[in-house]
Image (tube, rainbow over all chains, first blue to last red; front, side, top):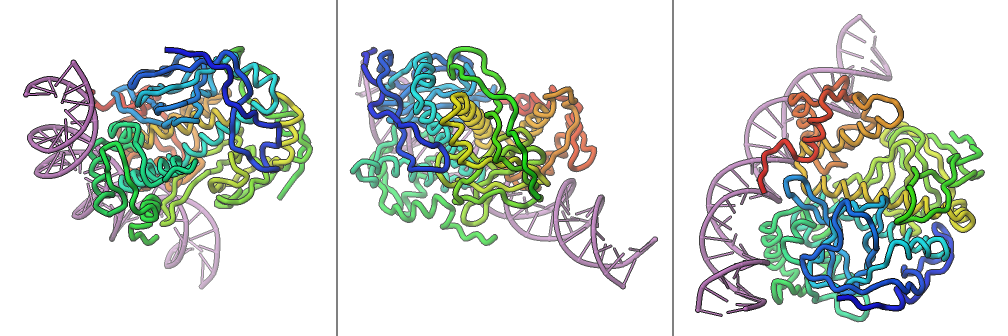
Amino acid sequence: MQCHSSSFVSAASSVSPWLNTGVRPPVSLGSSISTSVDRHVAAQEHLYLEGEIQSHIFLVLSGVIGSYKLLPDGRRQICAFSYPGDILGIECEQWHLNHAEALSETVVRSIPATAIDKLIMSEPGFGQALLRITAMELASTREQLLSLGRKTAKEKLATFLLNIARRHALPGMSEAQFDLPMKRYDIADYLGLTVETVSRNFTRLKTSGMIRLVSSQRVQVDDMNLLEITANGGDSIRLH
Amino acid sequence: MQCHSSSFVSAASSVSPWLNTGVRPPVSLGSSISTSVDRHVAAQEHLYLEGEIQSHIFLVLSGVIGSYKLLPDGRRQICAFSYPGDILGIECEQWHLNHAEALSETVVRSIPATAIDKLIMSEPGFGQALLRITAMELASTREQLLSLGRKTAKEKLATFLLNIARRHALPGMSEAQFDLPMKRYDIADYLGLTVETVSRNFTRLKTSGMIRLVSSQRVQVDDMNLLEITANGGDSIRLH
DNA sequence: CGTTCTCTTGAGATCCCTCAACACCTGTGG
DNA sequence: CCACAGGTGTTGAGGGATCTCAAGAGAACG
């Protein structure tokens, strides 16, 4: 289930000021990492478990990985979905602080931690790239905090769909239609809701004319504008 | 209201592998930064606003800073409290992605972004220290996601109090009693609740014998063990 | 063409929110 | 010294969004 690859990500990030100066180019990691390995991961298979020593970091090539935490009684919170192009597994400790599970059939490129360490020390721009990746992850996690803490179920779902739509709009692809690579149960655990509430709110978004479900896994956005307004709570009449 | 200081944080972090090898020392930033300035900030005063260009990063010396996001209708989510010793203001963009407000009278050391950039490029261990700080911030934000998404009000408050107690236990201080440097309203916006619910659950924790309120701002923990169990949902009988 | 998994829909229960009143504290001015 | 005002915290009553429990509808697969 493994095939070797000679390079990690093609473009190397240059050495440049991190904070205040200069343009911030899209992040891409290091130069050639001869030890990286592409690995096929079946749906439901785990990449790592909480508490395990962090031996690799991963670049998602296809599919989705869910990083999640559990409470003792089984309640689950998915902290992040990692889509193709995303990096996961960078931790502040030597062991992993959450579980990582493939939510669909997935291919990841796994890079040994030792290789990362070498690059950090040898290639000056590499550490900056890692910092930028981590800071971006932090920013989107904070965005998710706002969603979990202060948005209604309908707003949460609209926000989630909007984010996926935008991510799909990157190349020349239409942002109007896309696949949801994860199950309703996973969406629920990401949004801090139950499956039933997620399903009910899909229906509400359909009824409001924002989206259609081509299939239960494929979404067609009919009114991107209204979806965006809904995501930010703009359709509710709240005075404050 | 400003007094100059000659150094930022005394200890310099050394150049060492980031990921898998070696011990991970407690983080401390850079060597002498001659341009850093200590600044007194009144309660309710803002350090920066969302969208502003990021000109400085800040080290909290005393008090608390709240980093928060707003929805158009005024709903607020505090993403993080920054206590003495914490760094805030590291962003993945050139502008700030959230507001930062002093929640009590506060003193911060502000370091110009230009100085940070110089250190990143000149001192090899510095970028690693920033990376570790950001990764730690990400880890605690994910912990907060679990709280917001999956915990009950009582569990959220217990988790919050437990975290503060642990933070205060660091030197030789007792973790049993401490001040809450922020208002109920801020705690509510941090936990995704209303002030009333926060207040009611303070009462519930009191009634359960876990804590006492010396004053409304000062907490005495009587049963740390039970508090911890409550924080992780262990006192509710849930089978799953 | 069952079996299983997933998704949707319904009905009732529950936790938290909303609205409201009151208690407490502090500072101010009479 | 007291009256008052404003900010803060607590408590109560009722309502509503989401959860729980339950059943049925679709889709995937051997």
